[in-house]
Image (cartoon, rainbow, N blue to C red; front, side, top):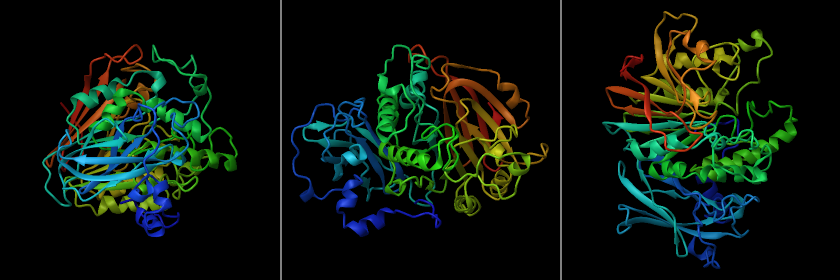
Length: 518
């Protein structure tokens, strides 16, 4: 399901199975474990499932399940209170929450090399069907999660709903957005569009989540695998984030803070030598795989990983998840370089892949997940697609040849709705699609409806909405239209009791790439 990238070494699940015969390599990946390899372990501590459960990589016949054993999630060595030995984990999938009608079972081996995370793939399920799942270790059972398999290829689909979230700096406020998303929304999928964690040191100066405390181990910027593991554990210990993951399958892309602010390809924005920064990228990508419900194709090989993937929701929607960090050209040294035709955001292989998916699509709606904003705002914003105008124009040209393209983005900690022009140098020209930018879950604290950045955005006629408060985006797709609802919460720093409120709602009719405000 991942894109082909001939310039980079591929590590597919089929290749691993062929090499190992479901042996040591696959066991180390936490995918599967034959019964003979998993003798009963000595007793373990209570609370093994302190980081919850998740599902992801959805398909019509199954998903990837995830959990990470961590009875002490915030243990400073990054191992979650687990002994440095493998542990057998059983998993079950059932048609009912009480697990009276179990339809699939299996085992995975949780090993210290992957922070005792497991990623078993469940296959052979029925399309468009609700299932429940759980993990078992000895007498301990995990929380129960649920997922719905995707529709069969080409099947007619009446509706599909997606929650879009980004930028969840735990230390800047409570995950109130996740609380409402998990409990109150009609959802088939949640899409994380970057900055799932942040690498900054957490001190009294930026710990705005009132009532929260962290140890000295969190005070320094992350550099090691153990520190990244600990940071994921801190963020994933939040009960509202766990509730979202247990509710529906999750798919995710990264932006910069999963590694380091504003890093570009293999280079640090803060002067770390490339040979040293390669190690930091490698451990950051490793921690991302360990802590997310990803398929084995996303397992890093050193400082390289493939998170670019896609899937179809019957005939209704095609999703394409982009990596806008790993293959981009460096920050331009000046306008001549910035406007060079050869300049790329995605790299040649990924660019060709997404163009093919856009132009040869059977779906009514074609959704791209981008780590940074596509909409033209200012040539000074070189970290976004504004810094790659030729690459953006190639993307817009492919969107013009597609059907109902939509870009889903995060990064900027603001709600933004924008119409994408065929050529941004011609503001009176036609639209080719729309971009929906979700605000942050918590980054930058409470935020405000307007701020110092507002004039730079709203001066453009193609920008239809701007709101700097915290929240999430809900996207509802039908064959006739897309409805985008931008939800916000008035506060997050003090506590998690803020109600959700509607910032704006837009309808985009199929075949008419514009934003009609309700």
